[in-house]
Length: 563
Image (tube, rainbow, N blue to C red):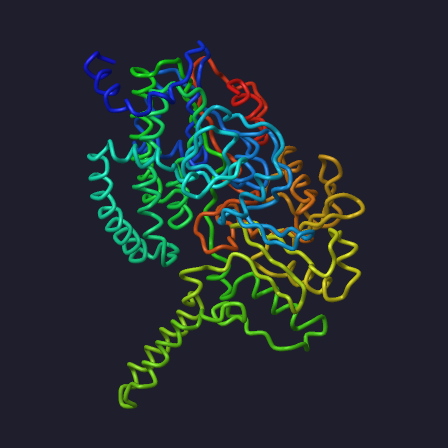
């Protein structure tokens, strides 16, 4: 860095000088996570020219890249707990139910992530460092846009506090750029969705998603990059930040979509900016590590395919009972009892149809067709607040969705149930058999006296230790992977103390997996690229001979070096 540029940075960051770290001679790390980007999709993006900086690091700077296995669930809270702390037990999904406390834990909500954070006891690898845009803080000293922290702090502080406001104040040009890019991002969202629908490609739109996209793809990405560059200048020893934009777009447009992959170009440009600061302006030597926590698999929405949510399916099955003559249950999630405002949209269309003159027959028929389409796919509540879990108090069942992974709990007992317990009670056994027959469900997993029991329409098997023993038909785990690390991960997932009494994987045909959330890109279970993220390390950190079969292994071989 030239003297003029050094003088400029010294002047601009003068207010932050008290935060400078002692120059102790130790190497630091800047770890940048690109959320949900699989090894295969990164390779595809590089080949298409979307990641020139990453390509240059691999081609000219001697960086290494390898694929690794994320473990199960293939979800950010599980993976970040493992990467930061080397401890990720008790996180069976992105959303799950704690039978003991009778709470639904959802990592969309701060209290859900805090529940996980409070139960981690191992020290974090980010101590005396910084955490930006992460679910967990890893014991970091400085946080911004971090959901859960070990020490209690206000939402204002978790968003970066006065430090972030000051950082914004000294970057007026970036602020103007964010304002301009926000408008461009909104126009891009409308164009990409219209083009995808015109081409009959699957997409999914939540009503607030365009605003979420602007927040994550423009504002948060700029702010976290500004904070990382500042920390490098300060000599912060450990910096970990998540670029979450690809994950948001891939869920809505697909992991290999042009919209998702092309957005990587902007993340790649931020990586280039950080790399320049590491090379020219850092007071200590830094290792740059790029990684993803898990991947993503193309998906089809369960609710769009079968015109009801999984929770509605479970309610309908339980309501009819084993003899098929139980009470009636409306299977449309847009008019289910726990979505009382969700039928407003179809109701408005129906009202317009009713007030139309009788001679406008075609107009009324078209309106009613529109009403039925909205009701079968999107009630008002489902657009703004899509169903993420269902609590059926009448039948004492709780269903949580985590993309292509779902957990079902029988809430009339506090202990975990095994297969024998499920089949012993007629209504539970009826639900178990009905789910096995459903085309949207590819695998039903339970505990059993013999081990972990796997069943699908193609066959039955049991996991004994790390081996699958087929009991009948074909190996039901075959579509999802039969490698020893997959078998071990499935076993460990089901045996977690707060895992479901029934664990469901969406049906997987080798390309698309059924997602219980409304998504066209999914992760959570096994099956496809969702369990195969990437890690890129500097020349003197070759991990090709290391065993990376769970997120905890990344903590062991990478993060613990700098703790």
